[in-house]
Length: 224
Image (cartoon, rainbow, N blue to C red):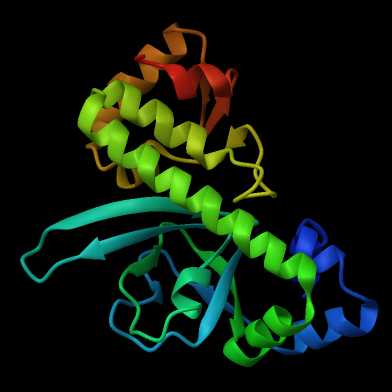
């Protein structure tokens, strides 16, 4: 629970709650450890929880019966997701899988609905969150259609440092090249080439198991 407490301390909506309200929220959350490759949630299942990545790295993706798959976004520590699905009465339309062992907080529907009904800061947070996510997905569509692989990977890395969506993130991304490949939808070999090019441009530095972002804005503009 210590990890959950630390996560809630970074959330603007949670900091606006009274101590009693915060305890009510915590009582509506269960913690689960998802192994690497395991499902956090699955396409087609009933939507009964809002989820937050307490620690780890997961990806939101669509996997088709034909074998085709596409990754929508990566979700790192501090990020909450699934609010859009919670606001609609339909089965989940995507899978979320753990890229490494991850601890995930599951808030039940009743607690989520209580926050909607009683907390103005929570509602403001959801509006900001949905708007930020919409902008992220529009940007991804634009990048996919207009940019080459190096520039798309640069945008992918920059998106992982988003203080709105991932308030617990830092410019030192604990990502392997394989994990970056899963998130960007390119091979590990192509990831290596792109990272070297971005490093030569002075935008990042590669360390063992870590990518240090030196110029986030430069990554967001790379290839323009």
